[in-house]
Length: 237
Image 1 (cartoon, rainbow, N blue to C red):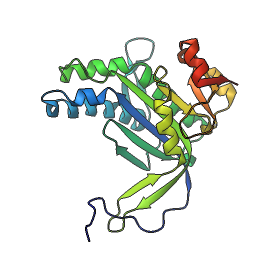
Image 2 (spheres, helix red, strand yellow):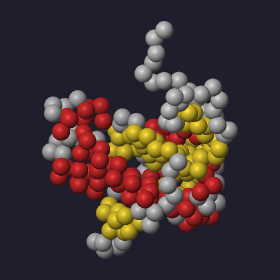
Image 3 (cartoon, helix red, strand yellow):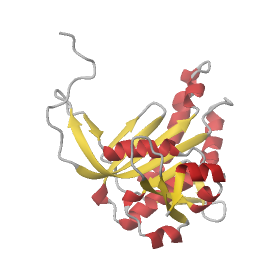
Image 4 (cartoon, rainbow, N blue to C red):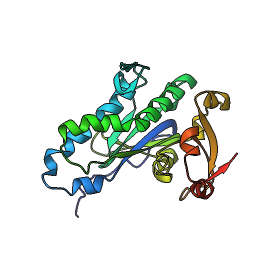
């Protein structure tokens, strides 16, 4: 009998736990990967991107986010993920929902929106080490909350996670490329707090495989959409 190189899971997964799930994707990565001598550049580029997410999560100087002058904002650490995984052209991070109170959830949203919005500054750093024109220049981020299940391999301690919120985060990061950052309303942020930080809640009405979903988007990003795209993808609450 042939054995797979992946292995098999134990017959029973964990009980569901509430998680916060972040998924990001680098637009144009396949084209980047098809260029000559790619082995010399892909790791350098990815390390710079992943380092930026590490700063958002574990703290450090966010060189893409300035404090009103030319000084980078220093981020304090948030909570450590219970799982993280590189996905080839992006990455997955999962946190225990209960590790984040409301202010920390808002903080995470703000940091990720800032990273997306000022991604050009991260690209500028990457261009110093990656002398190629066709590097991925846009990033898409989806953030969701909900149940996740842990699967454990039969013959090792290696773990994988599955769940509704992971699928939802994946759909959100690719739902509207013109926005590039969409958060599920399931993160339960009060409307008054969202309004204060220039976000709004709308209904995403065409997510593949999902019913209508309340999502959080930045006001300015949403207003910049063409009317046709707004009407096709979203409904005002």
